[in-house]
Image (tube, one colour):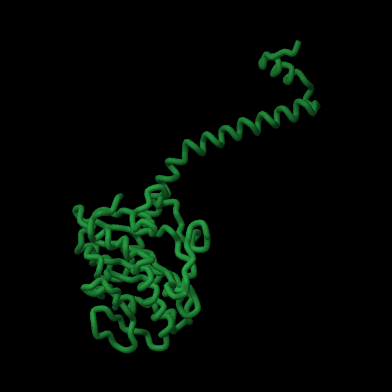
Length: 270
């Protein structure tokens, strides 16, 4: 009759000589088995702590980024922003996505993933990005419960690179608080000047749309003459036009436009 008592099995195993292959394989298997269990239990137990640490790190990075935006320190001081929230915008519903954690979502992974983005035809792809993620992050700063600032990650094609920027809008959602280009590969000394503090300082106070809701923000050759215009950079027409084009796309119907409209109306489901 087969002995089913595990204690007897263990005693028999220990009684085998150390040179026994059976004993060696059995001990190795048991060590690996219980180590795997320990690692799995530890990973599950620590996951909430890891997520909390990631969220704190992301929040700290975003707060540092916002504070570094041209003129943002003054804006934050004047607005008295005391809380910041991060959301993911679901462009299909023009609402916030509740089934994905903003802290773990990376829109750059979705930029080329057919399962996480949509293909854009040339006639609507003013940003020249080819595909648009289904979800994009948005950051809201509030002061005493009132919306003070909305920060939108935006990107698009310039002269010879993809330009990544943050567009910060004031609480009216129509006035630019700041624009910060934080990544680009444009021509050094020409198109790369879109990262110059002096040029980015021209954006605060500009209006993005007219009273009819038509997106009007643009970069012009020479000097700006309206609240919708920003001075261009001599010798960098295609780079600065790229910035204007990407803003038109992301503020339009295929970008954050419908979401911002719902935010203005106050009927978001968060």
